[in-house]
Amino acid sequence: MEPSTIPTTYDDPFAPGLLRRLSAPPRKVALLRAARIGDFLCAVPAFRALRAALPAAEIAIITLPLLRELALRSPYLDRAIPFPGFPGIAEQFFDARRCVGFLCEMQAERFDLAIQMQGSGVNSNPFTLLLGARATAGFIRPGEGPGRLDAALPYPEHGHEVARPLALAEFLGAPARGAETEFPLWPADHAAAETLLRDAAPPLIGLHPSARDAARRWPPERFAALGAALLRRHGGTLVLLGDADAAATAHAPHAALPADLARHCRDLTGATTLPVLGAVIARLAVLVTNDSGPAHIAYALGAPTVTIFGGSNPEAYGPPCAGPFRVVLRDVPCRPAGPLPCSVCAYDHRCLTDVAVADVLAAADEVISTHGAYAGPAPRTPPDPISPHTEGACHAPAR
Image 1 (cartoon, one colour):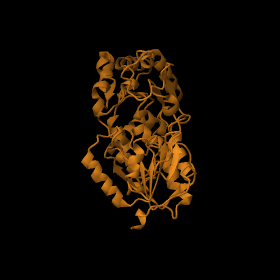
Image 2: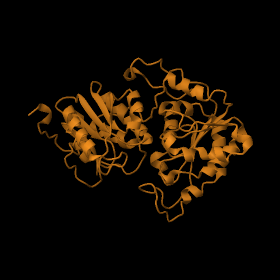
Image 3: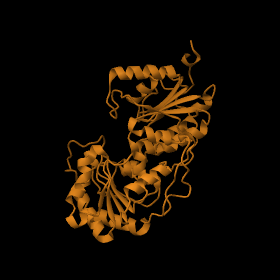
Image 4: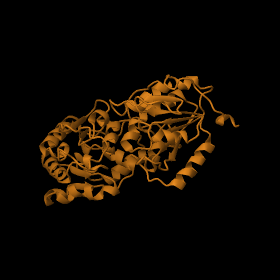
């Protein structure tokens, strides 16, 4: 048998420090984190810890195709492998033949270590084990056995999402290197954002009315009323953000604006790549958004942000650290709402409908008055990259 296929055991799967128990430092590592933007960014501190613990390893991440560019910009990751879909993991359409071919390719890679950072492991641990790595680690549901995992950590049921994958990295023997998230920006991203926002009068007031789940979407007509109120109070330009798939929701506030204010709106829905979206957010006096990917981009960049929470859990997905951030929500008995979206709501979606325009307006006013002056990219913005893997991150812009 080839060395990487020899069955091995690593003592107690519940004992911390698997990296120290391996016969040699892993040369090839596969991470599974096939989740959306916010979940990916929340795992950055775990990526950073693993890279510091395994400086010579090739670390590949299996993630959604839409996150490939973001993954390749990370100084902690070497490769991005598109997730092919798998039964029970709803983030990507499952095609059985494609998945079988993918797993054969992954087994031929002969990974030394595969780490499941997807969730509790009910469906993701079988997928990770099928990668055929010499050792496999991941989360399990509290109270359950490790199964075939060589290292198993009960999934933390409380706390911020940043803490979960970071706890797994520490359990494996990779000490934390801070809990800050990062969103790398390059000079070309800033240049594209400047072009999109050319001649837009400040302050730039961003609205992101979209969200993948209906239980996270504040009504579009309230975003429109909020945008009109902010323009009347502060002047400037309303900047609408969203991807092309959510065009109907994202365009709605523009269409609902009074004629005298509509000409002060810059609609960038579907007009940005993910990195350029970050560069636009970095220039805003405030971003008002549902709990969605752009909120997490803003947290990583330190951009002034007001986040409206519906059925999701602010303890897990709110701002991960102190900053120019405000959360607006209404207490309801059903939060967190469990698996989203809420197809039937016993409380008539009061988590969203009870959030008044006046509440969000007050939070946005406070953020703009305290933090909303963009002063250009931070001095540490790197030069144009020769190689993505030698490029550093652009941290929060100077304010």
